[in-house]
Amino acid sequence: MDTTPNVSFENTEVAFQYKSDAAMRKANFIFSLVNHPWISAFATGCVKLALKVKLPVEGLIKTTVFDHFCGGESIEKTEDVAKLLGRFGVKSILDYSVEGEKNEEGFDDAMDEIIRTIEKARTSVNIPFSVFKTTGLASTDLLEKVQAKLHLDSNEAHAFERVRQRVDQICRKAHECKIPVLIDAEESWIQDTIDGLAYEMMGKYNKERAIVFNTYQLYRTESLKNLRNAFHTATMHNYFLGAKIVRGAYMEKERDRAEELRYESPIYPDKESTDSAFNQALAFCIDNKQRISVMCGSHNEYSNYFLTVLMEKHSMKSEDARVWFAQLYGMSDNISFSLAKAGYNVAKYLPYGPVRSVMPYLLRRAEENTSVAGQSSRELTLIQREIQRRKNQNP
Ligand SMILES: Cc1cc2nc3c(=O)[nH]c(=O)nc-3n(C[C@H](O)[C@H](O)[C@H](O)COP(=O)(O)OP(=O)(O)OC[C@H]3O[C@@H](n4cnc5c(N)ncnc54)[C@H](O)[C@@H]3O)c2cc1C
Image (tube, rainbow, N blue to C red):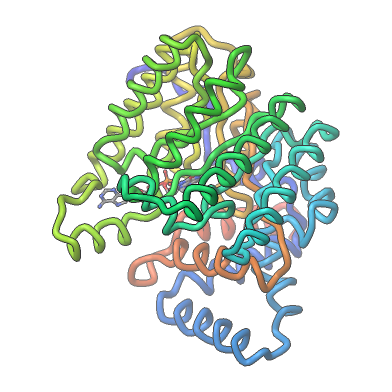
């Protein structure tokens, strides 16, 4: 696309302006560690073992990776981070990252906690969205059974009705508080069930504006079509469509299952096809901005840049409330802070929860940031460049 760039992601002073020198050294330590595949594997293995045999490693985790990737152990404790980011125009999305008890009580507790994040958001200028994962509110087996249209016995039918009620209570609260709620996308074998719930909620709560957002994983060959269909349904029923656009987080799992059960993989065969579909989805949302509010959930610099260009082409102001950019806390600050400085709406998923309970989330971040053959990751390069810049400035 041939327009002049209106935002650059190269300025590390902007990217890390909220981080002290000590925080930069910590970030350097963490990303240097995870950058080496074998050190990363060894360290994560040690952590898993230490937690299993109940060694007191929580303090160490808390002051290192936890502080880097999480906002705190409770909603209240995220406040300092949310305020700090907010000073630079970067908003927060409280993400209750506890993979809790998979029983009715655990699902009710998770619902209550998500409702508390909405209540918190209502009183904070720094928290414009809320978010949840349906598997925090429902058994995966049940979601899968519903999707496969298998017969539900009366216990299961009641359990699914309770899932609908939990989702409804969250979305009703979001509507009442005018805080949009993002429904994360998950594995393809439960995603139709999640989509069904999301559209039912949009029909109820998106009449005046996009309150309920569904997520589209553009690594799936069906997602562009699903997005278009969702738009047509929204138009037909006269409600707004909230669309979070992501590439998708479960590629290996999806491919493995497809191979094992011998069905065609639902994922594009290569990264280029995913990238192209992702950018087409952004373009579709902007083309239909009268009805669609969009969040681009990505650490890909080109995709974020591409969205700014689309906005410019459509003469949209950078602060247009229908467009949001989002990254995870502790990653891609060069994208978040540069966009915010240029006036765009930016938010970070800010995970929180007790250290031990958010470990699965932290281990996934470690895996994700481990590069091939020790090659320096973009993240690490930027961190080291900023440390050097600060040294040169104050030798
Ligand atoms: C704010 C936010 C919210 C998110 N919410 C969700 C969510 O609800 N559900 C969810 O599943 N994920 C979610 N993600 C994660 C997201 O789907 C990606 O896994 C992650 O962001 C990496 O993709 P990218 O666009 O940032 O960057 P990139 O590094 O450009 O892309 C990496 C991604 O490209 C795809 N890919 C890589 N190699 C191939 C290949 N060979 N063939 C096909 N595709 C390939 C995969 O999806 C991979 O994760 C979220 C991410 C963010 C930042």
